[in-house]
Length: 366
Length: 244
Image (tube, rainbow over all chains, first blue to last red; front, side, top):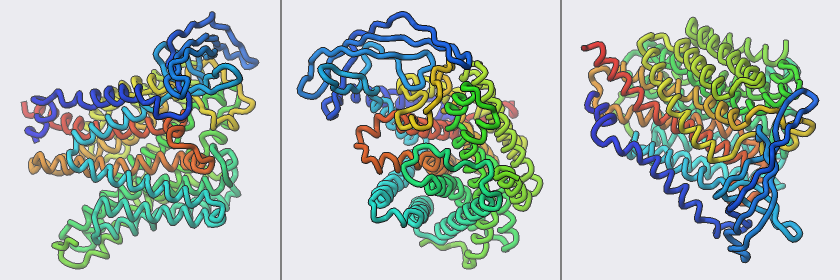
């Protein structure tokens, strides 16, 4: 163990700088990719700001807005190299606007004779961070990183296929079935990546799907019994379809990874244990009890943190805290709770399945 | 009884049935985290610096999650120290990443929700973004730190470098699945939106909300990946300390 830790802290320490270098390299390369874009891009050469203007709203919020005059040079399209001028306004709080600086690259839109600012170019940061994350992963877990990445890529591809099917008008009525099917395929693919084609994989997949189905069922039963009181599904964000469908999808998919994670931990331990059935079941339950708390926290923090900006906006616009909680944070909280059902239910389900299914001797690898 | 009360009650019953006493303390941890997040929102809306609030509340979230969900005090202490280190490191990554990405506040796809709201609220959305990103990594940090600390204790002196790498890889692999599906579950609506309105790939990549969401996932993945070697380092350092 000392040797391993020594490897981390001494000797080739410089390699921990590799993710930073990779980030810088990708970020730098993305500065040059403007010709790949069909939309006109401009590099800001001069940005002059006027004096900030004080703004007070009727809730007493004090903010400052600043007008900017921007000069830039077009980086692509046929007018490449042309100097353009446009204006920008930014606020100190910056909810929808951004302060432009020299050197920054932005998307613009042709309007009448001139150009208008549309959005900031973000590909460098996004791809740079992605590359840095992959590098860090390879440094820590070596060749196994590719397995992890492969599983994530497979899921992204599956998602693409599902969205493609779902958005074709012929399949609208089938949306619920389609997404439930996606959840099943997601689970199957991910478990095969984790555990290969084995009995263990079958146990993990079955327990994950069972626990998720039970959790979603229980969740909807409680929603119905309480007549959705205080749960405002119509407050969903990014709704292009029935919000009920979106909520169903989010609840079902959100907990899948966490439940899978937990079922894997339990199944691996239980199926390796050469003990009597009862002992094995108890060992599985003990492991499950230890991991369920932190797993619930993982999802809770993700779902609640997402609502932070909107919640602060609501409070600052003189809404009551209870109102803000119910309308803004409520859906995330409900989602976290239903996910928690899945995480808790997966413990006895996996421990039970893993105990029952493995009857033969342990030396069995398919 | 409203829906939230019913869900909470059902969860409490399930947790007691499955986890007994530990189930109760897990439930308590969830309630404390909920309270902490509400306090964070109130403090930030009240004008306190969002980054400062995030660090203080974040520390408490880590403490509540780790100490209330781990019955082994030794494992909990190691995991807590390691997760604090990771939190600080990740805060640095987040500060750099978010200052370059310009993904604070809201995007054009949010405009429907924002109708009728005054957006000039005098609170820095950039700082709120840092807080959001930090909060969403904390659960994952706590989970990985506890898993590594518990795993190393179990292995004890039998631990070999390849064995430790294998354990680390397993913990990271499954944690990344949790994060991937968790974030996807939070933003499925947005992806359907993009698919339905046929956004081209380059537009999605530069989209404010999508970019913000993707870098939040990456921050969490970086956090989990850093947690594994750092927790191992804390375990060995503590061991050396007790031997000396």
